[in-house]
Length: 426
Image (cartoon, rainbow, N blue to C red; front, side, top):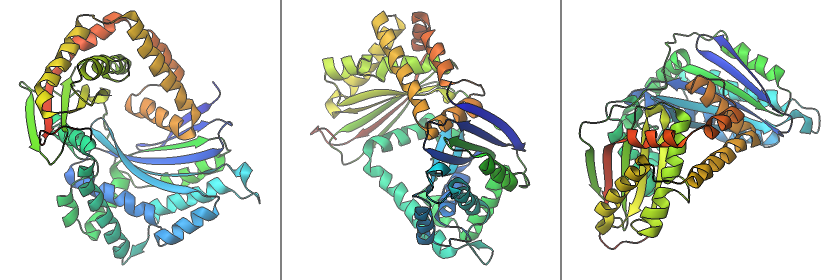
């Protein structure tokens, strides 16, 4: 394998993973604060990571920070939040070209990393808390982003369905929190939550790329090793209990095209088995849902399957005319029964294996892709699995494994966003 990997624990609940491959022209540094959250913490942590990205004590505004990053050959600092089973990961990261491309032998990676670490450990403060002007700007932007999610009807329908699928579970908390909590969140409260995030989160740091970054890793260690910690171990894999009777939610919106999301749950925990089944069922142009529900019967504009294996959930989301809602739902269930009865060809199974193996190889194409891969394997799935190892596992999956997966899924939630009866692509 062309790339090399090293992982070490540097403090209580703080890990550094380095992935090096000379073929890359860039280095990426990713710092993830992973927590089990409630609605307030989800809102606060999401807001805090945005505030931290904006500035630090040296570059006290977004403009000043952006200007300095531009000087460092167009480096960038980014933030995000994503779900890992029942946990949420709040991300701050940086990317830059490798030092070998510097015109005057500058240590670009170290300089960019210092800026990123200052954003985390030395933010722009005013009277001992976040700069209020910066805080209010970012708070308003986040609230607007949450409110604007409704404009993406497909994504909004999935988010609303997940709230029901994972009701009373941490996985059901919106990633960015809620407008209601954010509106009440003060700058003082956010700063206290920031200190709590540093103290109690599991911290996963990845450094990946094609440059030499030993000094960068030592710099990161020096800032994290003495961090005050009060960390409690967290788990990522937890099946979501299936409801005794499928929950049904119907919301009306001014839409031309209805959105229907069906959620199924299983107790099977084999990541590759569930992934390959979902591809065969609704993740490829040759899948059962695409070929039958969409193409053959024309019951929907789109119909696809997505797998949340850490929670044992498969989501089927579709765009459907209101007159076809029941027909589409019934046909999706029929196709699931067909898979459970083994009504699929060896060619369909091999096509799915070919597709997933091709996708796995693409992780080796970017430094950030490899960092994401190893975070999932080492942190979430708790195994030392390379993309090549996963390819071998996928290739070993049998017809019987696919049938077992199909039989195991139980309908848990039906979410429908309904509108008028005119129909139309949306």
